[in-house]
Amino acid sequence: DTGVSQDPRHKITKRGQNVTFRCDPISEHNRLYWYRQTLGQGPEFLTYFQNEAQLEKSRLLSDRFSAERPKGSFSTLEIQRTEQGDSAMYLCASSLAFRTVDDTEAFFGQGTRLTVV
Amino acid sequence: AQRVTQPEKLLSVFKGAPVELKCNYSYSGSPELFWYVQYSRQRLQLLLRHISRESIKGFTADLNKGETSFHLKKPFAQEEDSAMYYCALSGAGASKLTFGTGTRLQVTL
Image (cartoon, rainbow over all chains, first blue to last red; front, side, top):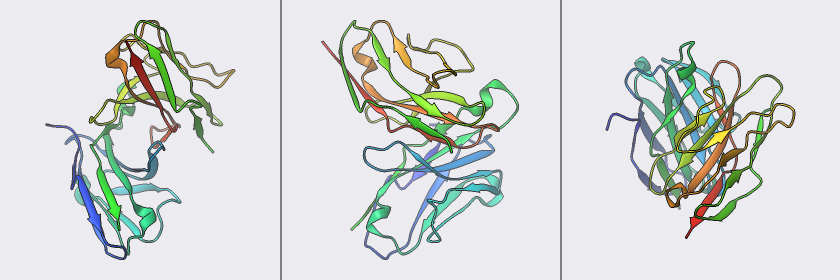
């Protein structure tokens, strides 16, 4: 499978613990996005990178959240001191940003489902 | 602020009946509109986008700037169309997507 891959697929953690998720985008894609999806809602934007630069962060991304994309390849999303409200599906997507019609399609991973107990 | 509204959480139709999934948006500028679909146990995937003006799997969507709508239509529903459908909007520069809350389409015999 050469699509976007995310690891782990599921994570159960105790409140107050730190968790880290990984996303491997499609190899030639220079943009990488993180979204969060809760039950009954559509995905909500968290942050995105172009290559290694983090270009935008949502106000949803509190100080407990940090994302990195070293060397412009894979990305990690860390949540510190998890809270029950962090329970959600965390989706990663990647796209290729050039000035063509096809450069806006975002390809999604299968997500990491986080449950904070 | 950009916003996407999908008023129906669930749309149930019979096989062979026409389908229309509603989507309205608000955006101050020229948005790009998309429909994403998520079949059972699969990842979210792009169905179509307004700039391509194509029909995918028999679905079409026309951007109506006057009514700020991008409704998804199909003349004859098939069982395999049953899925979750999300309307999404992107601003200039092809950055973040703003999604609606989704509509579950259920096609029954």
